[in-house]
Image (tube, rainbow, N blue to C red):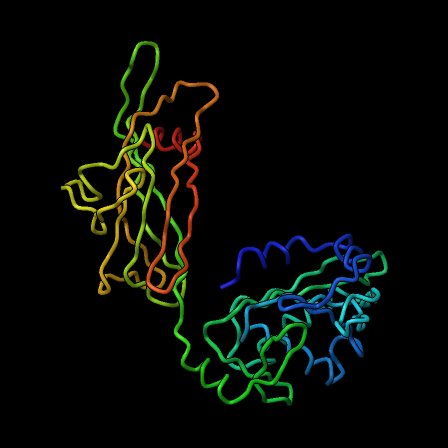
Length: 319
């Protein structure tokens, strides 16, 4: 899975960013590596080996971004940092070449690798970038004649020791959890000159990761106009997880035992919020629901679900 912050940085890369790297002497780090090419279009074996090593190292670690066309030089502290820009001829063709080479550079292949042109000049030269996500399907061996496993440490790619590889073979695939919601309406009524709709918002947990989520937990802060429905998610008073006792009355909490699981690429409805919504207000009123979400071995996530007024109107129109 690609971390949201890493993908955002990859998509936002521009020529201005690269020039800023130079001005600030940006150092290579755990998630950033600068590379130039020894020859055109990866025809030189050293370039292929560098690509294979980087794909293996980032995938076996915490993921990272390779920026092609930035020459890195050691600073006074012996850290590699951005030293100069070296535009790559035919940068669009370079990206096509990267796409064709990627699957042959590591074994097993890494899902989610992306390549893009960062900037292209009128003469077709420019800069490119590669996004390598952290992988739970590893370890990934660098090919291109290397046949070794690598990891990212600081600003370097290091050969993995036997115990590193053994640990990765035993690494458990992790779940990736997110809150999902479905909006339904149960008719309208008129209160004075206002039109009020009865909202039903079903909240649940979605697992898009490769690992099974065990003992899932969800808490919501049901602020006006919402309250947790006494009829549950099935209409007969049953919620998707057990209601938990809480010393914090502002949150309603739900959880599962160790044998309660959400399998990869599945979801589980947990609770229903109900409330009256004034749909005649102009401009429309957005609603928010603070929440907490976790499972065994998953870091607690806190967020706020925003339910936009146009979503509510669309749900009302669907009936």
